[in-house]
Image (cartoon, rainbow, N blue to C red; front, side, top):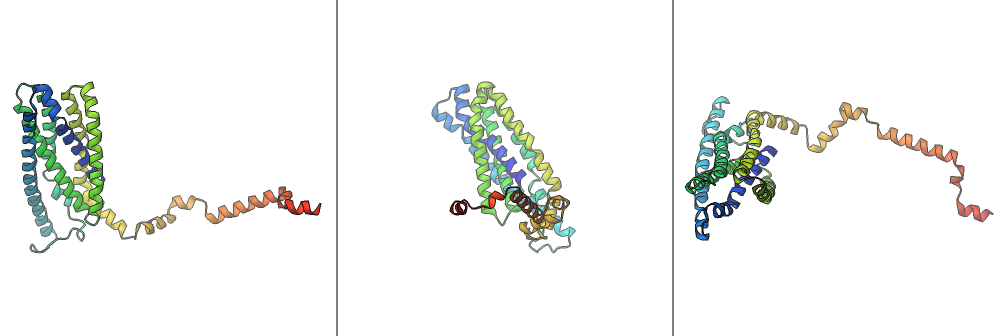
Length: 279
């Protein structure tokens, strides 16, 4: 789940940078008026709508496909309804990430293409790249959110708040440094940096695809041992805690040292008031 949050935050930051710098880039390279700059956001809106409907259809289709295979392998009736919280071995990662490979590559390629197409004379090329960036970003973020909600259905409200917090903080950080990158590098290499950053965290999807079910089964087995407090209590039987000194030995050693100090300094037992009164 942490990997999904990180990947979604990086993809969100990259998409935010593209959208936030649209007006600046188009005004700088093409000297567009305010009305035309506003109209230039229409391809991004169209890409967002198309990405939402396309990926929603693909998510439903992929889930039904994986669910049919799971029922066939476990001799479950086709009409029965699966509950993910009771079927921990259901490969939900593979049901949700079946189309993420080409969507992610499309998003990364479109981001790079957008940066390198800005200096060109044809404004249609960067606008087409913006359409693809919006399409890929919408598909990635929607798939990422659905997967996280599947992995944590019981604490969905808390998890959603954490996802939004991480995404918005990462997006704000990216928007804050993009101007510095524009000054130090060209716009082409600035968007290349953001695209490569997304590419660096892409192996998270591969790891989830390969080990997601295995890790969830191990977590389920650990949860059978009791609550987190019970598992912490069970650590006392490990070698590490056996080698640690026991509290009774520490207390006994501390008491011995105090007695030794009192023997060496008997004046410490005398009450000063009693001493004055006796004098």
